[in-house]
Each structure stands twice: as structure tokens, then as C-alpha cells.
Length: 355
Image 1 (tube, helix red, strand yellow):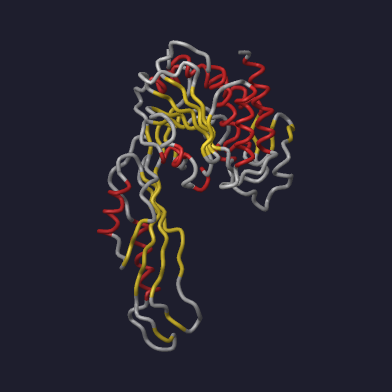
Image 2 (cartoon, one colour):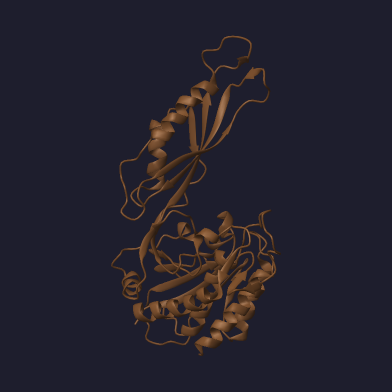
């Protein structure tokens, strides 16, 4: 299969994806585009909800399976856009458009890579491609729903913009709701048990709170109070203050352990986790994929941002063309050469690691 032709068609597909609205939960039309690709290449594929997947021609159940995954949903464009977010336009080598960088470039690069290797024989792993939905909202109808429909996954590459460096670990996420209680009263009267004043000390505690285990790849667990809500009118001291705490978990703690620690130590009256399912992710540094990547000159690092890796229980690597700092930004773009090089580097990586 001709690499140059695949690169051209991948860029063409990315343009079509940009021009097709695919907000999280509304990805049916972009799922159609992924199916069209497989039909054009006569590759058998399946669709579950708005998730589209296929396995390589020589799939062998006795072999471990490598998942190539990226998402085709997008966030909604922000108000700072100066151009049409759904117009796929190339200027100065940049392909502009909503979802171009996050994560359309990764998606089409992985799809082209899968197509390039589809007929390969004697690989150490099966290859399974999955273009999935609802990544931006950690939704139940994305990869979380697909995992029960596809063959068992032993290792995964999740396509997110990493400048084609190897994100060998990714922080997990737990969001907590906490309550500080006090005595409600009229603002004109003395009150030594104000929930708001008590919250000031609670905020100081969270600001200085540290967990002792520091990860080599993901550094420390980051605990941040991100929302405060209290009161309804100027002359009433409220009975309670509601806090939201965002906790980015490194690979040395489980989400359950973080819940246990904060339940025991946080100086609040109530605290509860919204979900414990978004775990930290990692892959051993001696894994074939990591060794192959470093041999090709790719750098390793730990990623603070969340992806569909959080839904996977197997070792996983985050890797893709584009730059994470462009994600969710106004006038989002990816360089055309980044997609072309991404396809080449994915292919070289897999050929080196899976032979």
C-alpha cells in the first residue's frame, strides 16, 4: 500500500471530519465517515453506537492484541474563534478547524497506520483500531461501552496530541464534593460558627495539603479546590458551603486510596467522590513499544491531562501528532506535516515493536 497516497487520503478525511459537526454525544455523522473509509479499502469493520472498529486481516486469537484508539468527538467551539470552526482550511501549512488537533490528526494517522499494516503477516500482536465517541465528556457510550464488544486488549496506544513523544504515564482524576457546615443566622447578629469563615481555614488546609508519594513520571498528586458555592442573599449567613475539589492522581495511588485519605483527613463535615473510574495509566519503560519509540528518538514523559486511557485496564501509551496546548483553543489547527510525519512514525514504531 502506498504511504504517500494514504497520507493524502488521511488529510482529506481529516478535512471531512472537521466539516462535520461531532459534539460529544452527536458523533453519528463522523462515525459514518470512518465506516466509509473502511468500505473504500474493503476492510471488514463493525460499529457499536458511534464507535467504529476493525481488526487486522490475520487476526489470531492466540496472540495478544494491540489497540489503536482515538476519538472523533469534539468540544463546542469557544467564543474567541475568529474563523469558521467547521471550515477545513489550510494556510501556511496549518490545517485549521475544530477537532483538527484534538484529536482528528491522531485519529486519521492511526487509521492510516492500521490500513497500511492491515495485510501484514507474522506480527507478534493483533492490531485493533477503534475510533470512539464521547471522549471529551468521559461518556458511557464511548470506549467504556465498546470494551465489552471487542476482543480482549493487552496493550494500547491512545492517540492524543503529544508532539509524537511517548506519554508513558497519565494522571487519573477524582472529583470530590465537600460540605462545610455552620450555624445559619441573620447577618446583623453575632455568629461564632459561620460556615463561610470556617471554610477559610478549610481552604488553607487544602492549599497546603500534600501526599507523600511522588512519582518519577507524574510527580505529585495535585489537589485543587476549583469551585465554591454558598449563600443566597446578603443578609443571611448560610448553613453550609459547598466545595468542589479536583484531584489529579499519580500512578502511585489508586483512586480508592485517595478517597480513603481525604475522607479521613479533610477538615470538612462531608466529602464524597463523584466517580472512581478515571484511573491513572502507565506502561512499563521496558515494554516493546516504549523501547522501540526511544530507539526512534522519541522522548518519554508523564502527562497531566486525562484521556480515554483512564478507561483501560491494560498497559497503555499516549502518543500522537499535534500539540496538547492547542487543544480546546480558538482557531485550533494542526500542521499538515505533523499528520504526515505522525503516520510515518506510527508505522515505524509498530514495525519495530511488533516484528
